[in-house]
Image (cartoon, rainbow, N blue to C red):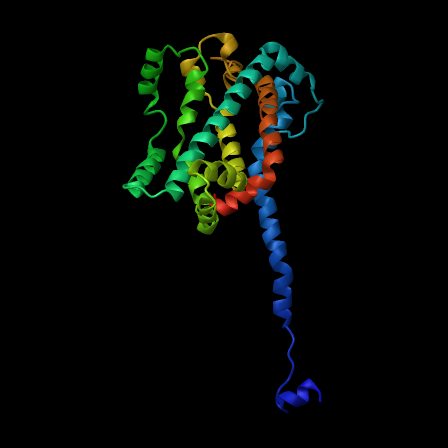
Length: 295
């Protein structure tokens, strides 16, 4: 017996209408088209920076604007390394950024594990107070920190740029706490039954499982430290101890700015960040999704 006979004389088998078929085809086209357009708009400043690094100084602000350089000047990248100790500044920035990432991962993960797993009086109040620190601008605490570090004798050293990261941050603690709370409690209970201490659970179980969140925190922390300009300007005075963003700021004069070399130096400075993102992209995306950090 056919299907039409089973459904009765008035029943008919209807397929998808033409509008539904058209909507299924157009929807991914519209969504992908919008995403591609938004990506291009967001990438325009970066594209302009890279292309400007290959132009001569008068060609950058010519009107009407010209995107492609008339003759690519690859020598701008050589001149920017000769105009300042580029390698030395890069080494200083890299050393500070790596130590800052290490300090953030260790301190924030310990605090996040305590807020996520341990039970102690006032835990929620302490966590909310800790989160409230994110609403305090860094400029507000800059002068007290400067006086404190001066009393320690840390001025004109890299210590003020590294040591605070070993005391955690509200963002890092929040990010890792959200991830730790997604790990089943049964896993930790089984480890306690087997005789594991709290530190062994944190180090041998939680930290390996938290690789995506740790990679996310590492990328954000590295970017923040690598691009930091205000703190190095405040704490450092010796030329050889300066970081790369401070060195690039020297191309901006009071009356004129060497935009070609500045764009070339800025392009070189983003290479480590892009390399780190490509290396940690798999864990970075997974960490953003699982920790609920969006936007």
